[in-house]
Length: 381
Image (cartoon, rainbow, N blue to C red; front, side, top):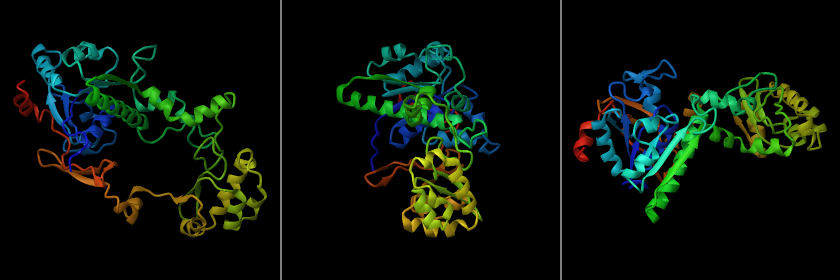
């Protein structure tokens, strides 16, 4: 199957996780992504370990986020190397980076410089806090962005202090936003021969991610966020929304009518909360009652009662439990990819299907400068 972005050439200067997640998605959709890496060390992420797991001598993070790309090493501070990259840019559809403000200018790949080389280029840049203001030079680290954006005040139980999400969620979100902007400009480029400049900041992505809660904040007069004292899963939703311990595990409950739950679960104490408003104003009391009651039986026992009644609920699973389910296996979400030196590893595939076909690729992450000679010859650099 031909993929939608086949024929699109992306020159990618980005590092770490945010923007490289965008170029990964473009590669999955069929684009050719040439990753520009600095001499000797290459992408800093090769040595950035988010765990002590080493894969083929380098960080597992690098391998997860840079599969299906090519590696070209160049010293952008040297004129000869820079001129070679300029020739590559002249034939590209997209140029992207996630340098701090001012760095692209120093390396000779500012928007103005790149547009002078290729007037129809789609130029995409991702920053931590935007290119203006007193925060513009701060490091764009996911935890820092979660912390200042208010996101950590929404998670966990009231009184537990700020609780970050246990994934680099702002990195991935801002990468997704960057990819969306690139795709929009590519559509215009292919139809009207007009390029564009896409700018995304991690801070803006973090704020937009919370659009639901921020809208509530302005509507209710700026009242402080109050999380549930126990079993919290959403600071603004009423009972029963949350995660509860059972006799042998945990169960998640979404929205539901409290008296009906009382009937289903044979819990008399819940039946008195007949007013919808009480599910919010007496949220902690309801959750305390529900939490104690659910600990009297196993998770499977409760699911057998709740699911036939169309109550939105789920068992809390770890990866091993999930991966053993038939529901997961039928998705075919795991693929094995291979590096140029023969090293192979398992990772996730693109979650998008096109015309019923899965977007898989057997190509793993590139070794440092693996494709430099080939690209020089192909593009006469």
